[in-house]
Image 1 (cartoon, rainbow, N blue to C red):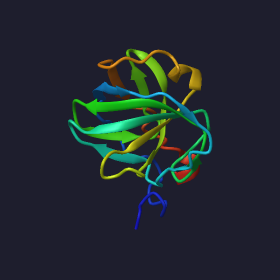
Image 2 (image 1 turned 135 degrees about the vertical axis):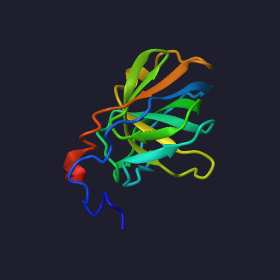
Image 3 (image 1 turned 135 degrees about the horizontal axis):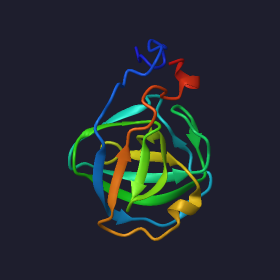
Length: 151
């Protein structure tokens, strides 16, 4: 039984967590309409040190379990530490805020996870560079999309 789908949590189980840090190792380009990313229902994923995962941006308001269509490919990040990513976490690349985690797509697993972010596409269209710092800061740990999970 998935505790999120079963609405076991009346509030977020996350009290505090470490900031995840990494470096941009691939810069992607391209915008796709009707991509059909299927966000998994879980609002969090464990990230292991040295893993490489893909960053995808959408302007669509999306939550775990949703289908995301219009996207912009950002790049791939190699994580310098392990931790947990949670929906609502803020993404900064090179010190600039890009968006907030809205969910995860496992299309390419076990190769890599698609980390899907909500934010203005224009933020992602600025010049990204190999080696830029990537930081995921904890979002509102008390919420985790309360409307969807009754937390």
